[in-house]
Image (cartoon, rainbow, N blue to C red):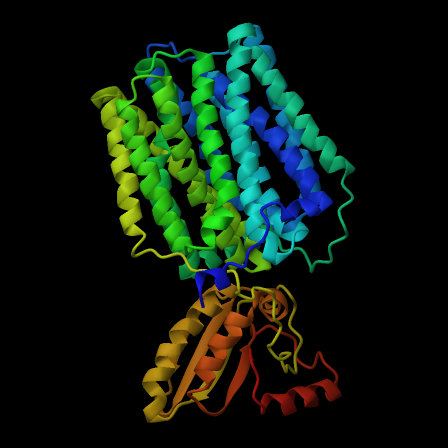
Length: 552
């Protein structure tokens, strides 16, 4: 299959044909302009403080740190509740926080600690908003347009990164920082109005999962899915050094280039313009390069441009270099999130995106103050060159951490397991449940069977099992017994009804190809499960089926 075949050309504007996507996208753009203006206002408020190198980088940390704490719980809520109303509630929260910021700043009551507290509050709202929005995209555009929609989402982020700081710079020069926070409140109101006007089609969903089990299930899926772990590690290896461009940009503007707030806004805008160019051109680039090729090109371009920034003597030399950095940043983030969304099954998508956002912003929250300390102790140029070098190293690491191409994977739920042939009916919350499956394997197939069962282990664990074991029966050397434990009967039913995909079925088929006859399945229930709950007719049906081949 050629690269062109794998990436069938789709117009970068195709998702705009869907009215809901267009208006929500526009609302996100306007809201994000206000968010980025708020970030610039918060950073510039103390840029002349003696401890500016620490305070300015801590602003980014305070904004990103809540994502480490709240993105996964936010993903659980986005999987469980109506995403439209969840986003609407977050926008109202943003408006309240921004109004308080504006009032306190105008009154001269904003101290560094208080500013960082409010910035943390804004970051908490973003943590709740992003998983809902990212997972909502998959509802309102078809799968073949998802990569284009993801790139347009990156356009919205980076249009905001270009417009928000530029707007904030102009406002700060003329009227000060407080009006910037007022703009944030107005911008949040626009997305709230769009969400209120949208008539979202009714989505049929199964029973809502309780919060804590859903949280655990999302974490378990990511822990036992090597593809997702590889994608997240590839993301972190780029983000940790590359975030220095955002953390150090105020210092580059004020110390290296001698610029004021308006010049800083132009530097920020250059990053945003490069990001928009990257988002719009990436579809054509993907027709000629694989995802891994795009990631390698993006990292190398970013490293070279950011490293060259230490030689920039003035604004006009720095601007094109930052355009290249913006391109590299967006090409990396857009490629990774689109491949992740295409790979994830629907039942866990928002939760896994929450974990992605934890890695995305968490790496920045951890790394940004480190780059601030490096700058404070070793100088700005050393920090820039060190960060650029590590981005280059991440490009080399991509030769090992390859991201899969997920465009043609079928991730829709597939209910291929037979109904459990029980003579008893357990309570939905009864547990733990142990599913025991017996296989007969001839000696010549044993090695291949054991290898295939490694993939089976990952399939069981990521779909809901809390424990998995494979035993050999001592009394009969040809028999193997697989056992996996599920916390409750309800959780096992979720495996039956919506958590399995065609990939899981192919894993089972690959293992079953090495066995003799048919596997025999038993469901081991808690000893207190009442007997004779089902009718005699149903019990007889269960006994008949128990002797047949069954999947769990």
